[in-house]
Length: 194
Image 1 (tube, rainbow, N blue to C red):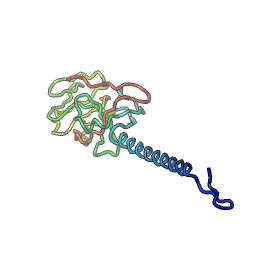
Image 2: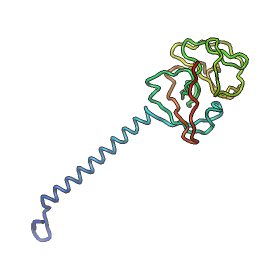
Image 3: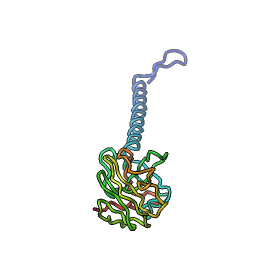
Image 4: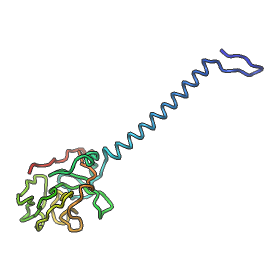
């Protein structure tokens, strides 16, 4: 229903005003929901999960070059890395992230002799590793650090804690834990008990 004001002029009815206000409220609520969704999405991908691409052969045979890994970033804020964990690390001397396996935690003595890796003088079972590493004199992992190695132990294939320019990695440099490879799809070998 319209009230005629004059020639060609009309005034909106109360029902039309109410309908317009309802449409404006719906648009505003839709915008608010969209902004909240973006904020939640940003928080999840900034602090919760992430995707990292493997570059190189340092983690073969466990991880393949070019694989896209779904990574749990939240766990790096809650827990500390332990034996056998695969971790994404921001190495201080590099401008990129590296993916490695935790071999030692604070207080451990790590050495390599005859192609075997020893933690506290015990050879560790490494069903996930390939290649024969060079011997390495014992290194004690400092407090709040971890000792990491690539699963490809062939000399020159992995930049890891064996290299004096890298050494043990601070716990604060761990940025996440890969869960699985999204493309190509495969599971990541889990930690072994020592």
